[in-house]
Length: 257
Ligand SMILES: Cc1ncc(COP(=O)(O)O)c(C=O)c1O
Image 1: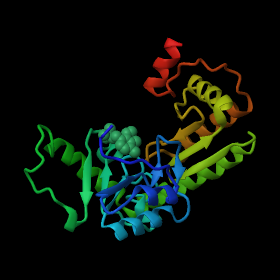
Image 2 (image 1 turned 135 degrees about the vertical axis):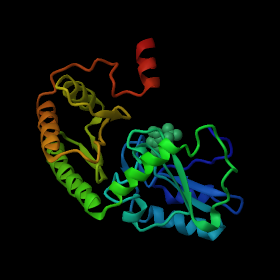
Image 3 (image 1 turned 90 degrees about the vertical axis):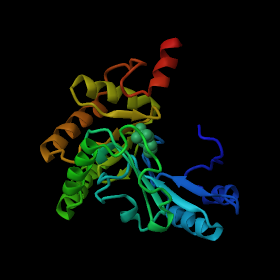
């Protein structure tokens, strides 16, 4: 919606090279796409964007609203990917439920100083106290290791479940995972899990997204996997066409249709 952006398909370095030039101020990308389908960046894509930005004097901005704040088992996903952005955005898990967002920049690009970008609740003490507490918990290497461990358990189990559905695929890192079951199976599996009291999310109508709280227990993971496995084996419920897994706009289209 913001004017001035040229768009290139995620993962297509050739297209990015066409879109970026000497007039480019910055390249903005999610290191792992969330709403787009839990898409990992292909090998060399982020490094290629880094080089492209350096070549043209553009800033590399990672949108880590979804992938950050410990979600991939690293404090920020870039740390596990080995490509350092100039600026990154953070929100969602950052406040542990308290609404807050932040932009972080390398010292040399931190154009804003206190008071430059005022807003009524910007930097309010309640949100800042929440962020401080969250960071104290999630920046602990032991906590992050546990996130990576739980993510690995979940991903391995999802790969086994994926084998039961032709063409199914598992993507993502840590506790940001997607099980792509295709447009036929995914909505049925989503509906059935919801009936069993396990709420996942569907993105793009094809992919079950798993993004549990980082404090999810191994017992809860086992329960979610059992429910998912049963739903994949016996996707009995007909998709309602309108479900919690659909974005609001898609629900509206379905209702109108
Ligand atoms: C990757 C990503 N960036 C940005 C946003 C928007 O974040 P906010 O609602 O904090 O502005 C979202 C929301 O889902 C998101 O997933």
